[in-house]
Image (cartoon, rainbow, N blue to C red):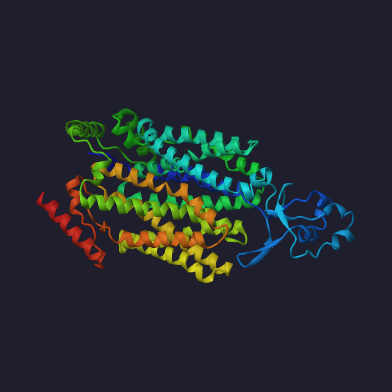
Length: 562
């Protein structure tokens, strides 16, 4: 008897699991969604132009006159806009009244310019205050914003790596609250930063918990339910994350001051520490650690709330099962598996490289498109809202698609459709509305593939190296959020360039996915030898439904033989 057998008796998706998932684990997704992207709006760059001290008296009531006589214009993305970093060299001190200001409107063609040396004026119509307006992070300091996003990604890479050890050694429950405490501390501290360096340190601290803090709601939801409900929980967690992006869009639209925004995206989650008394530890983790009495308390609570009964002598049978597993594990300690085992055979090596490349592509493009939403032009709050909202319809067809046409073709189609949509923006680069529509299609595609990939990868890696493979692929995939801000930085000169780069990545990942074998209906490989039996390079158009039926018959015959 194992835990799945126990859940079959006391309820795989009963009242207890539903309450924990809906009231605790799904809300537990919100901190990650909020803190992953609130920095985009804290560091938003409003339209700006050089400040001329002599013209300050006319700025409030005659802004257009001030800009026309002092700021050169430049063609940017097909539109003439005031230069953000240079000012005309003129004798502004002679202007003492409005009539004098008007006579300077006609600027000679050969008027020299210079870099702003008295700061900037910022358009406050969209934002009351951002770190950019407060510390003049524009022009020669513009890269500071990209650097902040890159170091935020580095913090996430390190934090995610450490989180795995914390979650496996201390448990799912303590890991969540440790990272929640770190996130709340640095999130609140962000609001009180007095300079860019301090703000950057606090943001790295927040980044340390992103996306690691998402791990506990995801893993605990999977481990509390039966095997038939794991796909449902995966979809629900992804829906909750998309809703977090939608809620963040509404919040940043309502709060235009970066310090208030930092507090608003953090303080509500302090209340999550009340979950300490309601959030259970994973019974699977407790059993694996030999903490049978603690697991028994949780099982009894599940049975009581689900109005079911525990099997007789179930705890004795569980002890026997897990003691036997530990004994076998000790006997097999002579066979240690490491990362190099993922590359020992050509078959597994190719699958590892392809999965890792696709993981890098998915992470890079998903984060890149989310970062890019405010830069699309038009209403950046609406753009970000749509970036989250368009993910929701994908889950309607994604679930049946994975079971009908298979994991591989679902993954491939999602990435190819998203990639083509991103590349198509080149054809309509001067039409912001069509560009936004194509962007949304690209976001739908990458959102779908991001759900399929982890499932498919877990079905391809053999059990003995599954944890290593998933960990390595996901960690290397997180290199994407470190470098993707550079791609968006390049988009400052050419709006659609980041979309073109991400489109190429998506199509390359989609084509690569066809090199992987279909896993629908396949039994999970246990050993490296089992993994070798699952082929590579099978770019065929075979009917996956027929494959599924064939696999079922094969497994049935094997069970009969046993």
